[in-house]
Length: 159
Length: 329
Length: 106
Image (tube, rainbow over all chains, first blue to last red; front, side, top):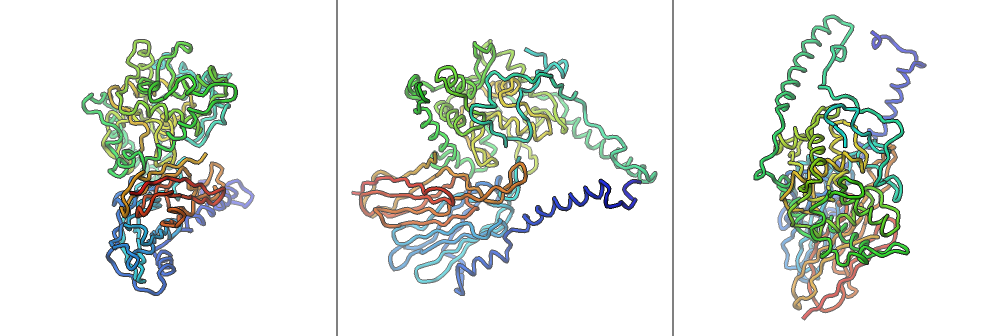
């Protein structure tokens, strides 16, 4: 019945409980430093300002089932003639649940010829990724992709 | 040669190197790794291998009602567990030759594409690194190229037959050990530490020269007893989870474990870029990582058991093409 | 000893849209990992990647820790003239790395 008796502060059991709590606290603090759908929305607002974001023109390719979140291939393509008068100025990529809400921003221009970029990203959890294209005429277009991530990046540390 | 099957204590103890977590340790270049690993002064017996058991005490004590309830639960739990374990306990059958598939076959299309494109494969960075090292002469000695010339010619087929029997040691050694042997004996330079950037790069560069060629390791007569040693290790239950390599990789390949598909464990692409590691790593690192996964005591880098297991695995994969540098999740 | 693998076509026709593939060796340490003692490993990533074609910037990427280790980036550019395509990666710490590829445009 040891576990039912009240303990004096000086006992080893109490010390361990306190130490355990202290040890847990930093972990809890670390885990709370994560993007959420709200912080992603805020990051999008910061990039886009008050402009309207419409769906279309941009395609975001990400595998729906990710076997390892450490390196997930991603391709973003925007339909655009890429002329001086009509081209993609930049592409912003956002996430919902990584430690930070922005993944990357790509700056293009008429010299790009084609608005298509591929890279590999880290995904810390099953989540939605949003890509927003900023066009030369000031309009914004978005696409999103939902992923299930079996092995997370950033927050799970393998030995 | 030891009779590992008879008495647990007769297995030579791991070499003198800390075996804590997996993969995190990297020996300092020139220290830690020794081709001729010396056992510690006092041999340490690994714990005897027994099937897992749970005493009633672990499930609850004090309250008699709780004990009865706990005992029932314990019985059900143990019965379920043993049913699963015993169904896995059928003698491991080797995978029929024509059913063998590379680990690449079990990965997603995206990861396969990462491996297939030399311009996207992160392992190619290590190959580039290795090429630079191949041509770099240590002070007062020749570079690898100085003796071996163009690696594409001289190293073609070499990795496919490693681990290979080494006359000086009277036992097989793996490619990393062979490279370090060259370094110490012919270049008079300190050996590279296990899992260092340099050793991985050189090993990857050499192994890549055999890419596409069929594996022939362990097929010679002298290697046979060591292949058998490796087979014993592969089939031996170990660790707190009391699992053998064979139970997953011979008997249950293709099924899922914790969200990932269990591959057949053919080391066709080592050193490989593993997404989980976010870096290159050797087969020995992967074996230690698996051992850690079943909560068994890991063998030190360079231990004879590691090399025997490497040899057995490569022999088990004989005829399959080498893929170095592979990409794996 | 930072290595980068850069793939630029050696030749192209004037006006042709060419693909450039780049892969650079860099751990892209996120700053969210901890070592075996529990101490945080400081962030060290490549935060900017720029492509210049005969000195003029044609592509730029602002990278964050969510870009995977050993960053792989592919993009397109118009083959306007012969010359040098310079690719520069700028890390948080240390010197920028530049690799140059020459292209002949007919």
